[in-house]
Length: 343
Ligand code: ASP
Image (cartoon, rainbow, N blue to C red; front, side, top):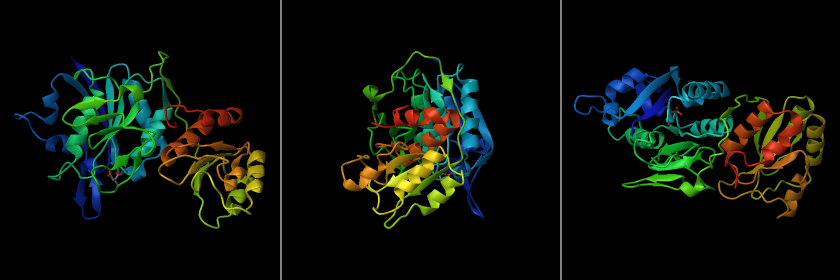
């Protein structure tokens, strides 16, 4: 069956070349010229029954330079092309890919089409690149109609033969081809010799029209608690009205060092409409307030239990909720599992 796929290249190692200053991204035209030729036609000719639309950031970036403004740009490109295409591929650097996939998952509500993020650990110009496999796998997921595969109507990451939910994934290796993992949720699909899509895990189609909200608050911080940590600096910042949200990365199942000024922090948060999203520093498992005595202090109206959310999803969810909802609705929104980001 004929299918249409939109590909947006933003940069990242996938298309990087060695320069005197280190690896830097090259343009989409350079990449197209380099991709393996099949019968003298370019790589994409192999998928002759898929209509591709190619788009590129200008300039292309190392993903360490990606900003919430870029999440909006990506979302606008997808929105503009949504009706005409069956699926979307975003080629992105791996460093902040899980932030972008989490942010996009919150931006788009009631998705009916796949938005697939991919990248590479070795550039496509390298003889052992993983970029070709990753892109080819992404084409199968985004061009699912042509390959008679089930649709994954979600923002997902396609990397090293796995498809992970975008807001469940974390970058776990700087060099392994398996650069991402999904510590608290099974993979949505495996692309080995056979392709297996775990349809029972997919977000359900709501039959509601696509809804797009893409404002992100910048007045947030991500704080990792450490032995002896005291929240003095946070109290100071919140009391000066500088913070609307705090991701507080606690020990284990939600524990904090005792005898510190936590209650003062929460009172100051209440006075300044600041919300705390409590998460765990552990890659696996979740917050369980009350399991240990030292987590009871977090049972406070300004604190939301982040359960098993990833650090990337926690930060982007907090920024997104603050950006798009009035204060009175924020605690409720943050407590809900909005896009499958918590169990
Ligand atoms: N620094 C690169 C980037 O995030 C790393 C990569 O793509 O793997 O753009």
